[in-house]
Amino acid sequence: MSTQRTATAAPTLADQQAEHGELLGIGAAAAQAGVSERALRYYQQLGLLEPACTTPGGLRRYSADDLARVARIRELQTLLGLNLDEIAVVLRNEDRLGQIRRAYRDERTSAEEREHLGRECLTLLESLRKTVEAKRAALESFLADLDARIGRCKDVLPDRDGARS
Image (cartoon, rainbow, N blue to C red; front, top):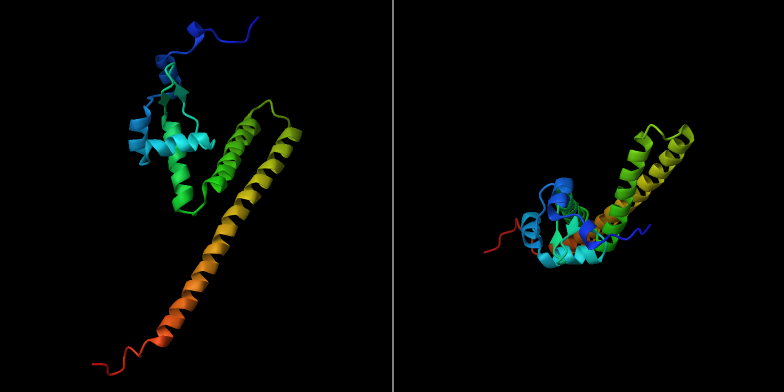
């Protein structure tokens, strides 16, 4: 028996909408997410985002989950100042944590498997913490440099309280 799908067996857009909810084209998705269409394509190229589906004509369709992922990417960029390579690592770890959570909660998972999953979870969380800690250290160093510059700048300016006409 062949495992390849025939053209008639491919899910229709209606089937995909039933599975993913409302699906948006790239323009509407970009507008709703507050990014450009180019950014969505780039995120896909880097493996950060995979559209919920693609039409037979090759048009990308995005779900609410996809838009939430774009929001997470933007949050990691703006809040933590992570670059896209760092974001890829964070997202992979978060995706794996979700898989671990589902497997751990599965009633068929043995106590031994749960222990293994727990240890993997701990390792991933510690890795994420190291990433954030490295950013914090870089920010603290940058702030210290700014404070030193501010101090030097103040040193060369005349006293603000002095009689200056």
